Image: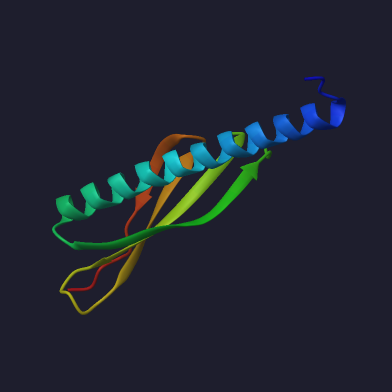
Length: 103
């Protein structure tokens, strides 16, 4: 089978899109595990975790790279709902942020 340049470019784009999707799912699964574990540790009920945004930082004041932010929702008493944030740099977990809680 003789492949021309358009077919090669198409296959390269398809492989890149597949790899990107797989990497995004891997990071999302990691964020869900972190959120569940953190909620269990804080003795609150985990509700869900969703991707909020991705940003590329090119400023010298930040560490260069692609950052992913996930929002996770949890409940303290079962009828309330709060949001926290999980930050990744590339595939690596950077931090988790909890909202200020009122007693």
